[in-house]
Amino acid sequence: MNRYVGNLPAMPGVFPDYPAPIVRNAGAERELTMMRWGMPPPPSKGGPPVTNIRNASSPHWRGWLKPESRCLVPVNSFAEYAPEPNPETRKKDVVWFALNDARPLFLFAGIWTEFRGDRGTKSKPIPGPHNVYGFLTTAPNAVVEPIHPKAMPVILTTDEERDVWLRAPWDEAKALQRPLPDDGLMIVARGVDKEDSATTA
Image (cartoon, rainbow, N blue to C red):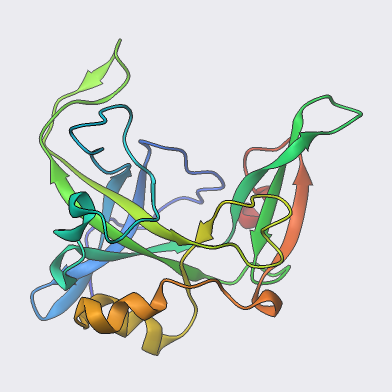
């Protein structure tokens, strides 16, 4: 694999429009490169960049479902806000999910494209073009559903799944858009922290 990003520091929290590492196809090889989180929204809807993609049958996303526009998003954990405020803090807890307490690496099934507009904030726009990515979501499993009943990321945990996602036709790859089995994920932290500090230990 080609590596163009150097030795990255720990990233205990990645937020929309932040740069983060992804893996994509580069000819016959694969490469690790940095992209901003957030795909262009449908022109008819406008609004902010789209971080999570559920409806893969939408014409807006269909063109990016080919292998050349797919990517893998490496993570150790991900977070969702709890549905109800914590009685003590009166704020919604940040709930962190991982494969287990050791937080081994896993990957989201993502897509990417080049975006030619500005990113960043309105007061400090960063002119394009930018390479940007988002990841697919699916129905939540029993671990995620009580916290986030709408969706969970499409998680790939085996070499075979990752290979299928990066190279296979959509008719084959679309089978990966399914929840991780309930025993494959657990809550590893809960509280006010918007960063998973355990990933930097």
